[in-house]
Length: 296
Image 1 (cartoon, rainbow, N blue to C red):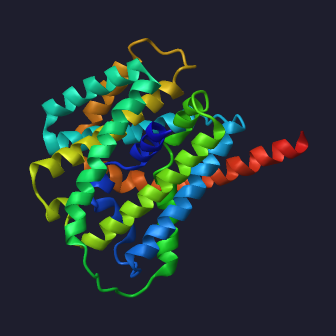
Image 2 (spheres, helix red, strand yellow):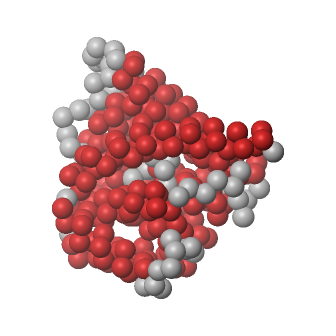
Image 3 (tube, rainbow, N blue to C red):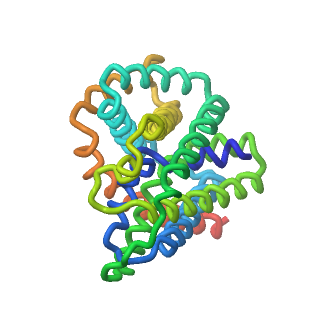
């Protein structure tokens, strides 16, 4: 159950969260105290993740033709992120390792991501806690903050359909529900800590707090976990399609080529679009499955 909790967290925490840039992009300038932002994120994230779990438990299978492009966009973005901070050669090596982990299966994915995520979270705490201070509030924009939290929850939960599909075969329903609650609480706590320590004006706020080797490794590993999960999801979503056995290598090669367009250019347009789409998708899908149950 602990491994599943960290797998859920690792599917949500990526490069943007580990650097603080994602939180500033979504919640910078909303004028709310960090604890309010943390509560908003935690509540909407919990609702969205739980709805996705319910959809999966009801047998809802998202269309591969809709979700493969979403997973692939994230896969390209993470590959671009690794290339940007660690170089093209390292990005190629990371891709090879990702393919290997996915080939070994879900259990290996949980094991690897658990230990990576523990390292990432501990490093974030070590860097941010000494820098916590009172942040003067600007004009309060509660409407924008709520909308940002809703879209943020959609963006960071779109990877969970394949994970829950596998988890239901290995864990009891109550164990999964506890893992969902624990992951939302932990992420909410880290939102509070990060938003209390970082300031706007830096491309990578956490890196600005401590530009050292361990922080760079943390950012790299946070990107890597998202890359592995993206590839895992692509592999799961394409299982029923008649694709060659070398599909992981093909997808990785295409992603590597497209990643050369740059990390920031990819996420500037893709992330908000995916976040908004997922919120609408989950609501509509939940309503449709509930309607089908009533008919039965």
